[in-house]
Image (cartoon, rainbow over all chains, first blue to last red; front, side, top):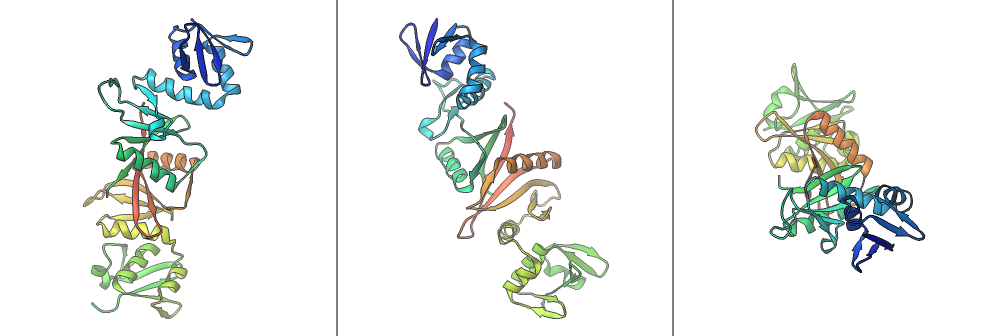
Length: 145
Length: 160
């Protein structure tokens, strides 16, 4: 199967439209062979290199997405929680359970107020917060002392 | 209880050993005196309505005491909150607070006090996590809001 990248969507030969993150995982699992960007076709490794140099945000998102899924943590959209991803516990079935974490990337800095509001969102939806920082997954939780 | 007088001399703070039972378990015994750090001293003076003896003067004014002891009020607010909750604590590197498991001498947390307006840099978090790893304790961020309330957050690295 092949696809064409438009924005951050990949339009597949069969007419399906999927996000680039999902498409990359499908490429890794050999379900998609090549993706075209502009005039050039890319295989998986070459596409990663392209993204690393030209679309750093997507590259970083995929790095996190792929790492979690590869380790057995189902990872989905975090938009409804204002987060980057929602993450299920290891080997949990997303059709049967709720996600355990919501994940944000920490870039540069975060205000104490912003941290508080993210934790509040997580806590009010019975989840915990993960801040991704420099290849580390940091679980942040409110503590009652 | 008579007056609780704490003496500040040559950058060191002492209370007479006879005052030991009024010092909330703080300080280190050194012969006939108990040596305190500035935050322990300030806590004692505040709670006991005590006096700071400095350069032959007896000072009761809180603002002057804060200046003499160079108290960071954000750190102090967290120090006070933890002690009032019954935790045994000690100041570490002049800006963090080590929190012990209640009723034990086991270190549990490294607490980093910040104001609600503080911007936490990612390199700060990295540094603190390394420090906690070295000390074999967990990281706690304590946020002091404008009303003086303290909220605690634990940060730990997940093994994914």
